[in-house]
Length: 427
Image 1 (cartoon, rainbow, N blue to C red):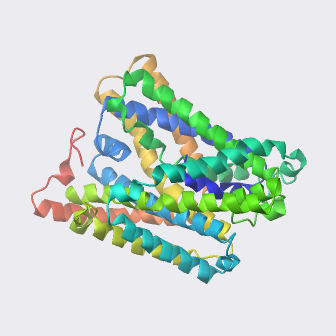
Image 2 (image 1 turned 45 degrees about the vertical axis):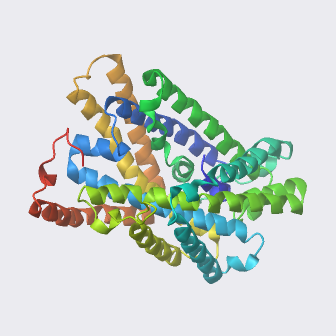
């Protein structure tokens, strides 16, 4: 569960109560994704996760493309956290609804956390347990206790608010709901440290996702049945508004404060994590060398500053009087960038299984079916991300072609083998 869930009820309210079907589609799709990733990690334990699987199956260009998309998704996702945090901060400071003030506040907070991140992962991560507890108090509190205030007529007040077909509305909801599950691939990272991983990892993955899904769906549904639709679609702090309707203004203040801590408290740790992919890429010769330069605290500070500049630009370009609209634009950008490496990693599994001669029997058929489900869901979510996301995402993918050509040329001049990596070689 991530703090990105704090703005989802507002965005899903913009779809309507039909978004429940989007949750169902997403949960099925994400479970298929997670089980495929888990199997890949068991067959080929590798540092680099889903990016490494894509490289193994399809070669260095796809590996490079996946790395780029994954990195872009990571730092754009952190922009969304900033926007969500400012949204809840505006609960106390309404002036932040002004696009200029809200943007400046987000930028100032971003660079404060870049400075904090420079002191290293130990300092940045010291408050993670506390901030996660704040998130759980709010999400579980509203998602469980809120049912006593739930009004079915409010929830059903607007079934499809998109003005499009029900199918399009469900696709939109599925794309938005995926935001709550980005990072699902990290669930299989510790497979090598788990007892009986063949049995334990898939079970833990499925049960963990079902628990997280229950929390997400319950809290989003409850909020749509507590806060009137007209209020919710314009809300920049939906959990705080729900608490206010339930218990009064003081409860709203507390929920908003805890949400702010949860959103902002996780940023410094995520900033460091987002620098790991380009750091590894730089060591492999795929990214410029400065991405691998570290300070005395082993933090790739130049990489942090570079992505900080990129995040600042995205904040400025997407600034909106409606923080919920800005959040929606950003998370759909992040979802699109994540789905491309997800799709490559999905198709990589049958390729890897065939290469290892595990291409017969019920196991191969079972995971082939999961791959088909995962691909169908990914395409479904891609289409639901909207024309703008598809446009910019496609442009991003096309730009990786000349970028890779430059990287390959530079690598070849140094005597590297990037152009001719085999399925058994790493990036």
